[in-house]
Image (tube, rainbow, N blue to C red):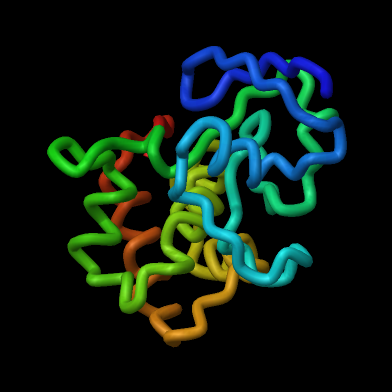
Length: 160
């Protein structure tokens, strides 16, 4: 066991775990942040997507030992049920969730896009969101939600 110091959603945490433990397991089991889901465990579905240093990553593939001092962002950091963030509001307004399993990962992938490119084209949204799958088929509503969030952001960008 090794102690790792992680900054998750703006808060510092110390976690004792094996270096090969996937970040997903640390988030869910040690920090009780259950937004990121275990989907395929192979980095093929995106249900576990979080941001690491602002980049969307599939946390099932990232060993905690490589996180270093990069900030981790999860869907819990975007807002709360009482005060949802812009991106969460957009997903609610567009009814983007059907079963909801993929939605946290979708939001985190969208967050990474909008942080870098607050006014993406539809083609850029599609390209960026492509690694994440929705088995219910709500892709069109998800794309509309990302567009809605982009339209709601100031021109210079900001946290979605």
